[in-house]
Length: 111
Length: 114
Image 1 (cartoon, each protein chain N blue to C red):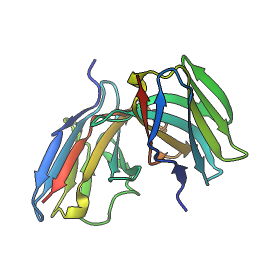
Image 2: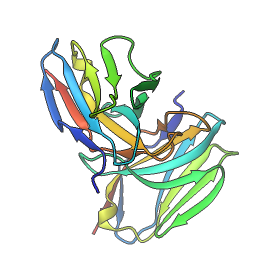
Image 3: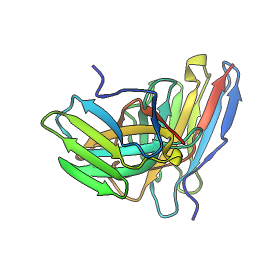
Image 4: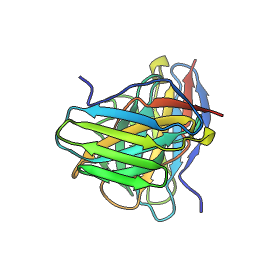
């Protein structure tokens, strides 16, 4: 079983739609949860960073963590064509040196 | 304000040759991480270094792969006697302190082994 599972998509939505991206994980010791955005031929860019359970909002982006279900989500409101990218979830535990990444979900926002 | 710089962007090697990938962290960052991204797979941790020290190499293959981060100059990921299975995107990331949560990634080096 993989540490982190993420639906690879691809996911296509019309401009202005609400996008929901999700990951599940198996290691209950994970405490830090991140979402990265990766454009084609570029490195991942940190979008959202959450510690433990709860919600975090930043502009059009909302990250949710449900540790009881080992499930994390990223919501994108009013999606824009510029949001078209691959979204990677990542997580780690306290004191660890490495992140565990999902495989990424490829999102296309159609104008 | 340069970010994490990696070079070359693309590297082509024949089987059996050596590959050297370079990474300069963001200014003020002294912690460097190397990750590998294989097609259809997520990023996989390889090694974590600080200046002149390898802190965690638990993700490094046991043979042919080595990494360094000298006192002066960039971090180097070295792959000896490359094989086709080494073809992947190699990403370097840096952070200002300990704890690998908030990483800043470079644009990667795409290694192709013929």
